Image 1: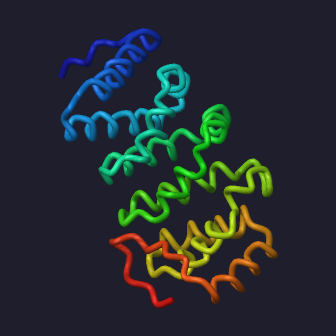
Image 2: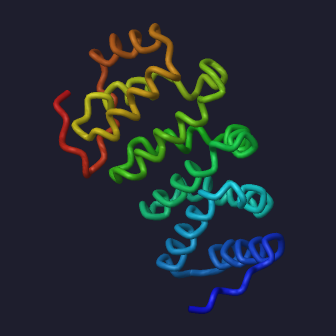
Length: 198
């Protein structure tokens, strides 16, 4: 079987990613947008692409897509951000661009993968240490994580526990627990998770 010709990693990769971004911006087809965003999210998994994706402003494209009504676009966008945010420069860009509220809004998605990627992204963003971005551990977010920590969905429960243990102080968790008993948070669990008893 013949091997594919080698592509110049500096020109070929950047050119290909640029073509994807251009296609996403110019197409009217929702299916094409979904496919392109899925491809970009997959490319975001490879650290060799980080510089190119920053150069092409794909992080902003992902952040903008979090506000879409199309749940599939939101799923791929948060997946792409989740893949990008282990990198310090990408993490800083997301934080400086005001990404935390957009990401926390994904916690109320009915799509399980969107919620899992959102929680993971918040954990990565908070890895700089507790208290560096108070929005990450705002009371509604901590209450949501407490609720997720009771989920029958093992992945969601484990991620919520990691969030609570690594990003929150014991006093934040205690305050959220005490207030949660007196409020209706209104953040539903993802559709594919079993219904919770509150």
